[in-house]
Structures are given as structure tokens and as C-alpha cells.
Length: 388
Image 1: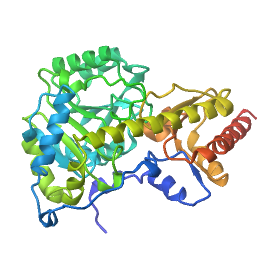
Image 2: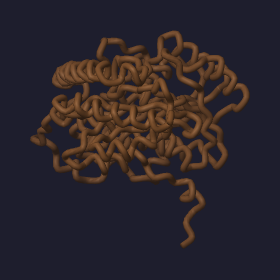
Image 3: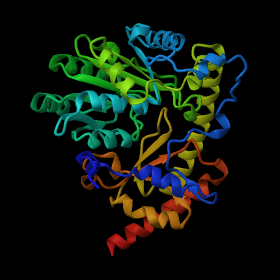
Image 4: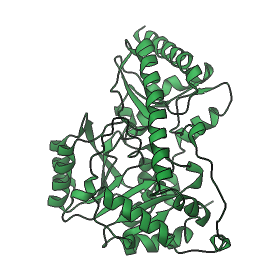
């Protein structure tokens, strides 16, 4: 059977495989970035017009685009509704951007570590994925300048607010410096912000795209983390030079995003009800983070180092005695524990051993302590075996 050469680069999603294994009721899962089901809001379908069952505009519902543009302007992004496109989850933004920019061998620049699915999409299209190391407050600026100078990448993909997987939030100074560098080299920025609303300390610096003066940009977000992931409603906002091309790619991909989900998003975004929901959500996840932090102190303080996340859904652990954490998956699943190894979050996984991404939003708090205790035992056993 003659498939395209692209298929040879297609990698199965490790996280989807782990999530499949984690479906068993006895498994305690720290793996996926799943919102807590008890916090998914109840949807009201009263008043949805029958016309929502008809084909719609490729750009998305005009009212929703206006609402999203108003929210973005509140963050400091100078934009109009004409620059907003509603997409099938912000994941589709990455697919459209890849189609717009990537040929086989195209150089792109990412954080190390970075979002697993972004890496998967960009590599599928044949990108040469270069990385810049993340520090506690954002990327290593000297390394970023060197990469921009040396490689002139097609675009830079960044997750500056509660980064997945590391939970790093860029400082204001780093955001300004990154924007200045991208303007200087004329390189497009793709800024991905799915976790912006999940802040536990009230801090929320302005997006990098709001600081750009010359460079082209795409800013993307989603309602998956604040409303329902099952709606598959995300959005992109793009600089005017990019938007027409992205729109044509959207039309050729799926014509338009599901209108029923868009209608639901319109009932929430910009309302007091939504703001109340976000306050409750932040409080709920802050409590879960605090319980997780306490359990980590009990079971992992001798094994790993980590920063306490100020937002988002993840802890990023660095083992004091590094090992390939992919080798821990099978023994962990034998103990009914699921987690995400750190290696797949890097473009060169075999060069980055010793990290674990642990989700704290989804697991039942009553099972949390036992789950981390078992995972710590699996790590210890592997390290003893390695030392022997």
C-alpha cells in the first residue's frame, strides 16, 4: 500500500496510549491534562436556534468572534473580530500553522520541554525542531538570540503562561525581551495560552503578541480547560497578513467548527456567570494543587526537585538520580499508576532523561496519597536496580 512519505514520520501519541490504559477504574492516573469532571459546568440548551444545525461561516459565529476579540483586547492584544477564527480546539491552530509554514526540513524553534502534541504535529509535517532551554522565568535569552541568528526559523512556538509540561510562567522582562528579539529578526510567533485563566496567585502578564511591533503572530486559546473539552471549541487570533491564508486552510480542513459548541461558548464568554465559574475553578484547582504539593513533600522530597506551579494543571519533577522515565511506565501500570514520562516532551527525547509530568487536577484526592506513594516506590526500585 503506497502511503505518503509523511506517514513514515507519524508517531503514535504516547499520552493517548497511557490514557487508554488509565481508563480502568482501579488505575490512579496522573497522566492526562484532564479537567476535574466535578467542575464541568452544566450546559443549558434552552433557546438554541434551529439554525445552529445548519452549515456556518468558516471564520466562526460572528457574535463569538466579537466576544473573543473583546476578551483579547482586555489582555492588551490590539485586534478586531475580523482577525479571530473559531477552531476545533486550539490543537487545530497548530495543524493550520504547520500547513502554512512547514515544508520538509523547515526549521522551527520550540521550548525544551514543550507540548507533546505540538511536537507531534510539527514533526509529522517534516519540521526540523530546534529547542531553546527554559529557565525558571522563561527561555534562555542568549540561546534564543543565537538560534534566531543562526537558523532563522520559520516560526517560534511558545507557551508562556503555565507552560505544558513545565508550568513555567514567563516574567514580564522575559516577555519584553522575547518580543524585541522576534521583531529584530522578523520571525513569526505562535503563542499558545490554554492555561492562562487557571492562575492561583492572581498573576497574569500580558501576552507576548501584545508587545510585538513588527513580527507576524498567531495567538491561540481554548475553552477546553475552563468549560468543556468535549465542545472542541478553540480560537486563533492572527496578524492581518496571516489571517486570509489560515482561513483558506481552515476551509479546506473542515469547512467550519461545530456550531452547537460555538453557541454554548457564546452563552458563557464575557458573562458574570463565566467570571464566577472561573473564580470557583481557580479555588478548586488551588486546593488540589496544595494537597498534591503536600503529598509530594511526603513521598518525593528525597527523590526529585520541582517548582510549585502558580497555575495550570501540572507538576514537573526532575529526579535527583536521573533515569529514562519511560522505563517506569510498565512497572507503574502494574501498580495501577499512570503518569507521563518526561522524554517525549523534548524533540530529542534520548538526550533528556529524568523528568516526570504529573497532573493534579483529575485524580480523586482520597486516592492521591496512595498513588504518589506507589509511584515513589516504583522510582526507588528502578534507581536501586540502576545503581546495582
